Length: 101
Image (cartoon, rainbow, N blue to C red; front, side, top):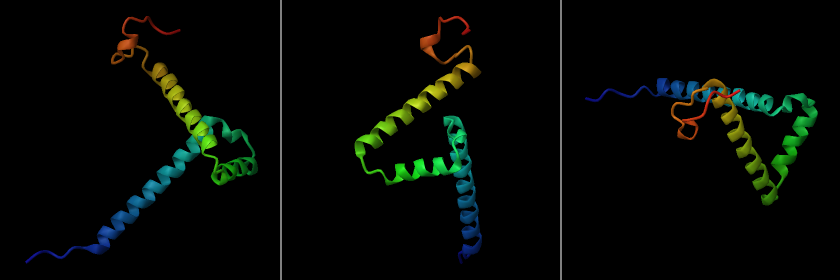
């Protein structure tokens, strides 16, 4: 005879995982606000800007924002990678380069 499933413990595990994911999302959003410099804005201004973005239905404007966001993350990760890994061992493009100044 099969052992009955413990639905309560499975539900609790899923609930705990959902809470962890939500907390991680909130933390990452806070880090994003700081990384972009948006933490310098008053909370009311930042809220208004976010609400305007949510209400915006202009697909061209949204695409322009997406493009800027992609560029931001690419430039940020590139700066971080060069700052923490000066030898770039896996990077063939920088294989013969000297140390960065």
